[in-house]
Amino acid sequence: MVKVIMHGCNGQMGRNITRLIEKDPEIEIVAGVDMYTGIDNKYPVFTKIGECDVPADVIIDFCNPSAIDGLLDYSVGKGIPVVLCTTGLSPEQLERVKKESEKVAILKSANMSLGINLLMKLLKEASVKLAAAGFDIEIVEKHHNLKLDAPSGTALALADSINEEFDNSYEYVYDRTTRSEKRRAKEIGISAVRGGTIVGDHDVIFAGTDEVVTFSHVAYSKAVFGNGAIQAAKFLKGKGPGLYDMKDVVL
View 1 (cartoon, rainbow, N blue to C red):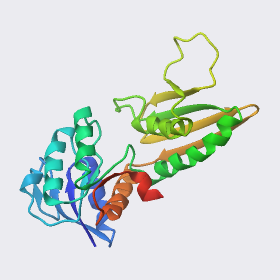
View 2 (view 1 turned 30 degrees about the horizontal axis):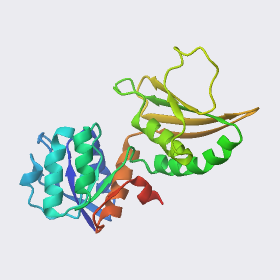
View 3 (view 1 turned 90 degrees about the vertical axis):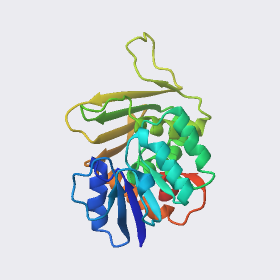
């Protein structure tokens, strides 16, 4: 049994993960942390993680960047691995995450979906053969109308997984309206669509002469990210210090 502290337990993702874990006999939430305590949780909830005195194997974090420093202090001090899902960290925080991973196991990924991380692996293999055959590469991502950033972090991670296979020789092109020229071979075009309640939709298009190969991933609910975080927590239990990501869980 994997015992979890849910950091950000009363947020949307925290409640989602709580529901998922209730149905999983291999894992349980033994404590939660959240500034908002107006929910009737089935486990004790602390307003600050430093106040938590409940033994646990892993911390799952879906919180706010302002709480990350306290989380890392607690994780290192208690020697408890952490699945770090909070986005929007500052460069200084990202550097600290890297530094603290030398003392405790930390898993951080641009996207917690198992499917997206398997897709990254497949793209590495496909791009080598298709790019060599002259296929152009374009990525189109779609998200709900409340998403603030564009392109998505996942779209960039997909592009990076391809570009790494070519010594980062490809240029990312986000906007062609200022370009009056034909498409260059060493480009990865990245386009963003915002509308409605789209959870997350990513297409990676390899366009060749007279044929097109498309890799697609569609998230129909945020449960896919919660399930990924749960699998990551199971993976991280008992792991030694190091900086892990979802590719370690998938492979």
